[in-house]
Image 1 (tube, rainbow, N blue to C red):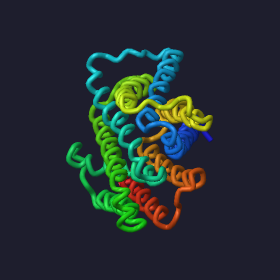
Image 2: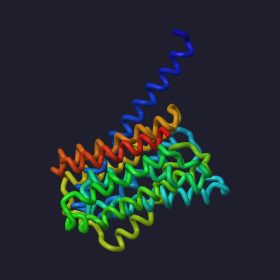
Image 3: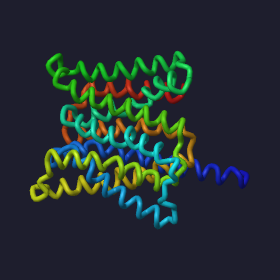
Image 4: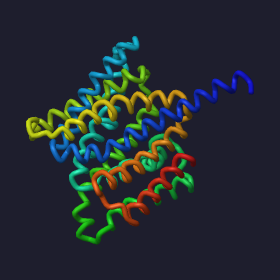
Length: 297
């Protein structure tokens, strides 16, 4: 084995480990978030950990010696990306958990690569191939299957949550396309800190204006959940994600995130006793197959 192949293999394996950590952290965050909103209102439960996480990320970036300054010409890009990738996602996904189980919310939310593939056609001029069209059909089918599970009454009750989760997935797809056309040339930790911090300010403000969490009534498990969302979901997972992107091809990293809804569905079934029957498994398979086809087409 040559000396050149050893570093390359080391970098690739390191990237896969980082990607696995990211997927595990984000997957576990779904049932944790579902539990936290049983003690805190959904918007503060999403916004407050994000704000604290952004402060910690700023500290991490400063300790690394990364510049925290955003050049004037990048502020517009940063704000647009923040709105789609953080603010909108945090609001609609937090509210969707009021109507949907955590596992189903994760499945719909992580259909985002399918929507990215569809929207890249008119917005980026990427051709909508047969494989991409089939991927879109699979993604839709998974969502429809989740809606149909339990009959018409259950579907009507789920509708607000489904629409909110779909809005988040499409919004994140638009944010991804925007970043592809207008990349933000900042260090990973700095970019994440600014976007998470700015994005969570309106989420937290709106949430606290509507209802202030009862801090005294928060259980130790509730505080543990908030700590997880702050330290793991926002800090560790984002740092590992940016590091993985530096070591792996984008397509490999995108496919790797398909593990997130799998982890979310399984852990929600175990920890929260959410249903894990044929409907949920079939919907999960359809969405994941669609995402895999979209990212490989």
